[in-house]
Image: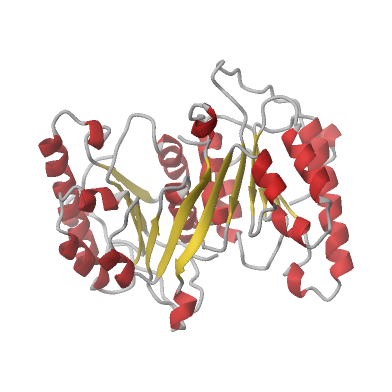
Amino acid sequence: MTMHTPADLGSAEPKRRKPRDKPLLIVITGHGKGKSTSAFGMLLRSWARGYRCGVFQFVKSGKWKVGEAKAAQALGGIDWEKMGDGWTWISRDLEESAEKAREGWAEVKRRIEAERYEFLLLDELTYAIKYGWIPEEEIVSTLRDRPGFQHVVVTGRDAPQSLIDAADLVSEVVKIKHPMDAGIRAQQGIEW
Amino acid sequence: MTMHTPADLGSAEPKRRKPRDKPLLIVITGHGKGKSTSAFGMLLRSWARGYRCGVFQFVKSGKWKVGEAKAAQALGGIDWEKMGDGWTWISRDLEESAEKAREGWAEVKRRIEAERYEFLLLDELTYAIKYGWIPEEEIVSTLRDRPGFQHVVVTGRDAPQSLIDAADLVSEVVKIKHPMDAGIRAQQGIEW
């Protein structure tokens, strides 16, 4: 889970592409369960294609995403970067969380500029926009105007309209029914 | 991708569980992209927990789900069964597709009865209901009244109300924007 500088990112050659290949900007938003898992499933498809894959997790918690990280490690060849500071919305030091998110975003920008990945997952990046930690316009323009061939997937609730406008594919996951409504606690192996 | 009879399924012991653990029936439906990938992400969480995992794919095509199957094989310990007969909705012999779906469902019922898995993914099972290949009541009662500790995830469009009523967690993936709308073809590494 260490952060790398662009210099030590290696020099694997990107795969050759067919004319029909087009890099997509994908947004998975909404208040239902399954946004991050959906993005992770896309990551596996890209992994299976031999794409260079990166994950930046903008909200960290002790137990969330542990399964995905473990699977990514077992598969190999997937960079996985965590940032944030515990449950950011209950952090005791919001300014520290904001600072870490900004550092993470600066690193994301460097990797996009360096065309480091064919598939980049920015998990729960929308929160950094929502809380005003990173300017919305900067995120949207960076993602929209990215060079070369880079699929980018952004997950999180309340994606701003400007990001939706810039995206090629947008799905909203809507909650129809949730175990919590019936008093059932979150289940390991499903929710984390 | 061979089918097993219950007799040769092995005898791995299920993991011990805490009192708060509750098996969930989960439905991921809707017309947006990301239902199967979302379910597959849940499968990875269960895999990471050491749960015994099984996948039954009720609609097969040449290229779909290849990435997921490849990842599952690389991770190991995940049973992956395909059935159906190509793109079932354009199959030349619908009765043959129906017969294969019924055979697959009969095998699913045997495994549920035998409590073979802690996590069972029934990918695109809703189509078998929609096309009338398997009676809705039989599927709902089998899943609702399953013995022991078995998380079950059903994906596919147009989940019937009786299945939603029986489920603990239901998410609907809604299409907000799709590349096809802008004339962009499906992209490898993302959609398959």
